[in-house]
Length: 338
Image 1 (cartoon, helix red, strand yellow):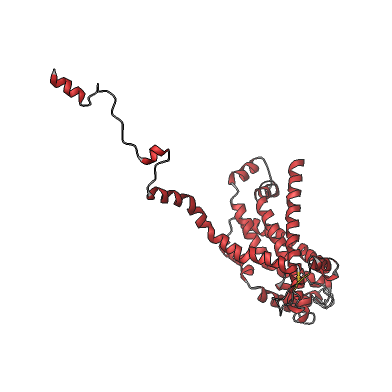
Image 2 (cartoon, helix red, strand yellow):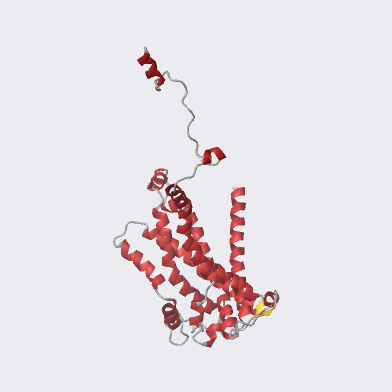
């Protein structure tokens, strides 16, 4: 009896409640227990690692995009010359008011718009048709795809020089070809619309293949079952193209339109080299093909007015924002009406 009583008193199943456990100072004070360094480092790694991975992008963006953008806006509010960039005279919005009243700005804006339309619309239509042809199973399709991308890989200088020789007034191949049909020699450089058509042809030649490959990649992502279902319903090739292909690549088409709009606004190298000399900066003797990019260059590096050049740059930036806002408004209106 004594033995069993002693065993039950030693903490058996029937033993009473255990004595009070030893409390840590953190428990007595109501604070959370300290976590080991390994756990803290692990939590910090999980939360901070994503920011560390994306930090290089924001550093580069801030150094090479955001800072120049803000500094250009600051310069546009001052009267600054290229030779004395450290001397600034406050102008406020005086440069913008002068630019608003400058006929050269409105002429450059109109030329940028017309050249952009003349080069963008045929370019995207030709790229869409070329991508539709390349989407079929053709022998040597890889060769044709590389050939379509070759103009994009060619430098602007080389392409512009070749096209300048082709559009030369007296000995150019284009005028020689037109003479076979009884057309007199066209002065491509010194006439407004011929010059703009010639510059647009350079842009079309360089960017059609690039956009065609974008469309081709989007077309190949369309499920083949959609074409099979359309064929079973009796849809022709053209109906399949308009009812299946076009809606399937609509987002890519919008992307290329935005990209082409930005490129048209920043058009610079093609008209500069097409001018063949001092007329290239001014966009011809009568500014007949001067774009906003050429006007910016003329103000900053020919007239040494960096404040006015920065104002032109910000005007181009605001025009792109306006185009983006209009595109979003049109898209919302269409979505509501449909």
